[in-house]
Image (cartoon, rainbow over all chains, first blue to last red; front, side):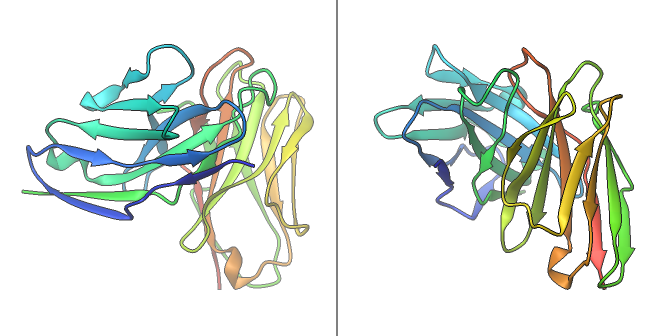
Length: 117
Length: 112
């Protein structure tokens, strides 16, 4: 079975400072990895994904993440945050072998990012 | 806009009642997923349908059921509702050869 651990439930950071949101996963098989963002009262929007290939993945809004197989981690980073980045961020995994077009996701508990002016 | 449409956006109902949540996937997507987001359990996968057939089941209660119709829209039926069923219910869809799931805006269910 897969599981995802997001080590920080809340992360406050000053505007224009860098941020790292941590994600570790547990799986006995290879995985696909995702970061989603949820703004207040909205649905989930995909920030970036890792399927294979380069371990450094770039996403929307200036975010990037690095897949580290040996540490089973997929941390999300942004070099300079904006007020508009205030939201909840979810790390998720899926099993590539679950069938064509199947992206059943196991989510972490989420990290609330608060950007302080 | 993800292209996934969920109705209604909000639903308030009493304990013991039954409700139906509706989801229209993106055009061309064959898979529909249902997730529950609650404060204590977080985001949990409930069930997946692929082209009308149940593909995978997660932590879905026996009081809950779902189906996917020939036009590919899906409905999640919740019955004998309890206070603890109050949550945000998300639908997502994915394409047969896609690489990600797209989420709707969710239906917020409040059981009083």
